[in-house]
Image (cartoon, rainbow, N blue to C red; front, side, top):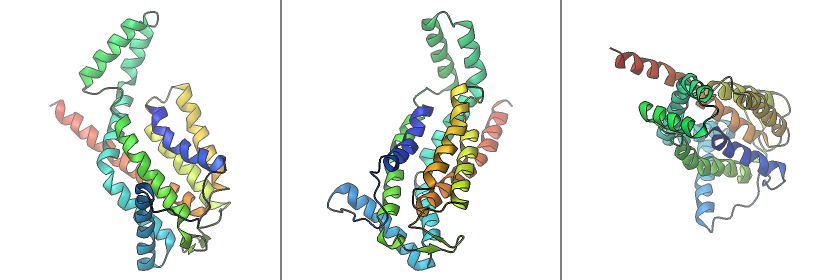
Length: 244
């Protein structure tokens, strides 16, 4: 599940690493459904940029609107992550107790999931729905011809060119915080490794991607961190009410 959750991020990074990503200001083909969808988001960037006279703030506004639209899905995904975190001690006990009997281990795991009212795949569907939306936003930023020479008041950065200082550091830092907050098992060696690999990859690719995309990553990470932060007290309150 965690691997699937990272797929969209790695997909975007792989596109840039292989040189398949369009440079900002490329031509967007709107003759098909996908092109029209990306075009709507690109037009939204232009609309808000004309209102606030800044494409950096326009990226923030469009990112926020998209996050609001998909919030029910993100809420379900984050809620599932919290449930998985709470289940980890019991899951570790089952793994240790039945480490020599995989069939019994799977049976006990399924019983645990049923008791908690969840299943291992419940966090996958929200991610699958979000992926095309996030990729479309990425392409809308990359294809928008007005972003090529646009400069944002957020640090005076030219959005069509890579920014080699502040944005890579912020993108890596916010990725680290988001990954740490959403780790299902802090003691899992693989997840610990991802905790440092993901920010490192983001930092590296931010040096070659246009600053507009790095800015989008920072905004997206901050919104996820805020959403996850406010999910914690709600879950605690719900659990407290359930024990009364």
